[in-house]
Image 1 (spheres, rainbow, N blue to C red):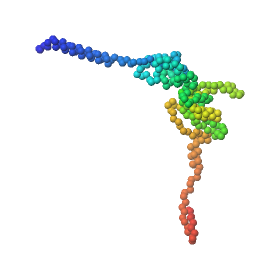
Image 2 (cartoon, rainbow, N blue to C red):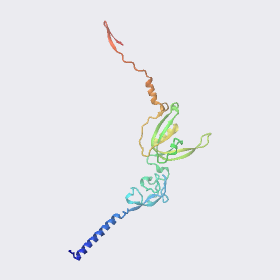
Image 3 (cartoon, helix red, strand yellow):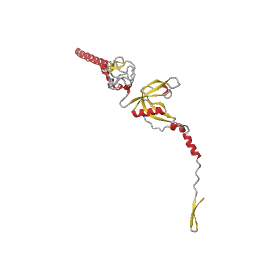
Image 4 (cartoon, rainbow, N blue to C red):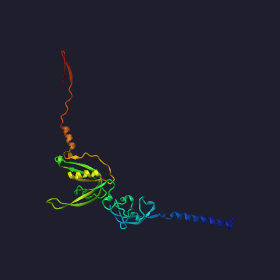
Length: 268
């Protein structure tokens, strides 16, 4: 049998050893977990209500993936000095610039109002307040029902304003002569000056009802309103009116009859 010289065996052993070492290094690099770089970012320490001033009691620094750090985040508590939340924040949520009121805004209801908007509070009953399901930052339509004046005998209900933002809900005590004080639910809405004028008049002249909208539904729908005399069976009345009409007489035939020098039509 032909035998290889010893030095060849040494070379082959070295090649096999290097190959095994490279394979082990490659397998370890693939199996090693990828460590994401993180940064300390400010998050809500607890649930924060709108119009609340942010401080060390409200927010805290927490590790956050740098790759998933949203634009507008804060990494220093000093950056939030004097800032006020404009929207609710939940515990652990990243504090973002778009969730805050403009710099210099004071805590309170004014922190929730964008430019050119106003806050207006209207009283509603439990039913028209969507049975207590209306919450801040919901969207509602306002309906008004009028049953006095020219609408005394034929009340009218119509959508007055649409897609209004709810700023808050509450209660007030209302007293009337001869009656015990009653707790009346109230809803504060975000309106434009023109919408505020219409809402004030509607509250005085009629009864206000709220209709809760889907949060992503911002469509404005044109409506004609409804009156009492058309509330029920409007289609039935139209069909009945058509039924009551007498059938049209079949067309008559006419011929021209000539008598001497005169000519006249005769139908039959």
